[in-house]
Length: 90
Image (tube, rainbow, N blue to C red; front, side):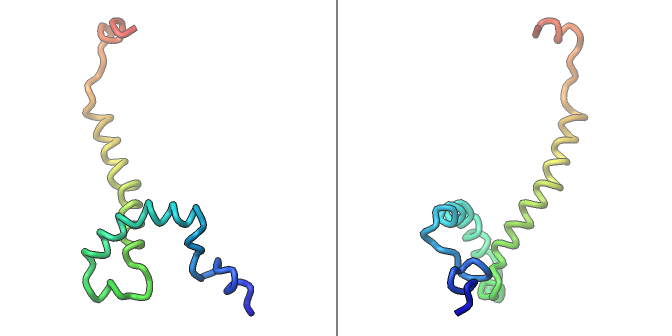
């Protein structure tokens, strides 16, 4: 018997009793469930979990698209402190 197939860690089913696997499932499943419901029917039954790929793409877009944009907006539009305000806060 193939040792990878028996242990279930290489392209196999992870052990659902493992606490790390249970934690990851509990954290990601609510978001993935919402995405799966909004996918077209043709993609819901695709052999690869498209819901996870969409969630991953949204997280990457948020990290590299939305967060830097908000950061730059905050730097340019934040009120500047004057010297009087700085002395009062000290």
